[in-house]
Image 1 (cartoon, helix red, strand yellow):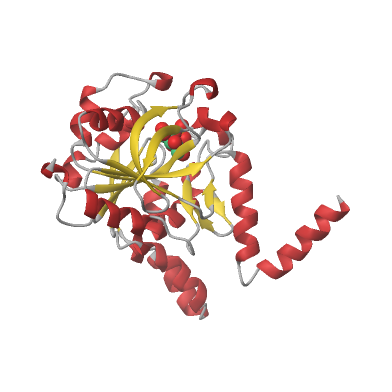
Image 2 (spheres, helix red, strand yellow):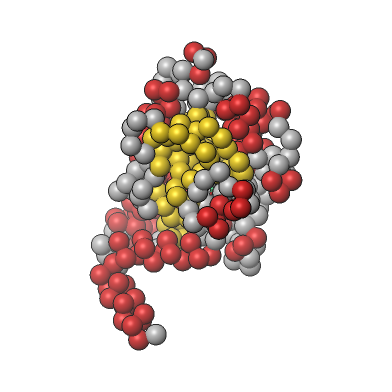
Amino acid sequence: MSEHIPTRRAVKAVIPAAGLATRFLPATKAVPKELLPVVDRPVLQYIVEEAAAAGIRDILLITGRGKTSMVDHFDRQPYLEQRLKEKGDIERLAAVREPAELAEIYTCRQAEPLGLGHAVSYAESHVGGEPFAVLLGDEFMDEEDPLLPAMLDLQAREGGIVLAFIEVPREEVKRYGIASVEPTGTPDVVRVTGLVEKPDPAETPSNLAVVGRYILPAGIFDAVRRIKPGSGGELQLTDAMALMLEEGAPVHGIVYRGVRYDTGLPLGYLQAVVQLACKRPDLGPEFSQWLADFVREG
Ligand code: G1P
């Protein structure tokens, strides 16, 4: 299996962000869900910050129609910057510049939303035969408890595919890719023996759910070409990974014990806003106090 052992850590990431976000309509009719604010930064900025903090500064954003404003967020804004400079608002000036300084953003359009595997396959020429990270555009991890560096290190050591898991209640397995695993001897690092997309709770092999962080070898592109539409009639990334696993690629996973913010559903989005607002040094103390009073008084 020596073809699966890479020589260097992945340095590029792909963020699939072409979805229609029907769960957030009408808010997402003209605003991409990836730009919904969590306190005062859009979701997508947290994701790009997570990649940058792990040393990834080359990011390919897979976009769709009506979503070009995502790219504008990572561009400079000379007029706005000039106005803030004139006013001496140094703090806001830095905040406006920060997204453009985080990473190099490249884009590519997914012409039709045919599934996550299909979206990722657009990255083939950009990643150029090297392993790469995939970060889904609606979830991010606690910055104080990073996940990506450990995944990148594991992939550089073991090759193949590296996934991350959380334990979910059995009735929630139908929202996720689910893995069967065996221990490796290292706590919270597992060897994956099977993968299935959105199983029925009665037939699930476990309650270990794949979260939206993947380190993939370039072989995934060929695997996507060889799968048929799966769950929801879409070309599923999980099915392409399962095919590589079946054909002998090593697949490892890290069980993540930190806080994962899932902004893909209104409830998770609201939870993320409240949790991160409470953590903010400037807003947190006052907001937490108000929240406690509000909850107590109903
Ligand atoms: C996607 C993947 C699924 C994974 C999930 C994580 O599903 O297909 O395997 O568990 O992301 O959030 P989606 O949420 O796009 O339906």
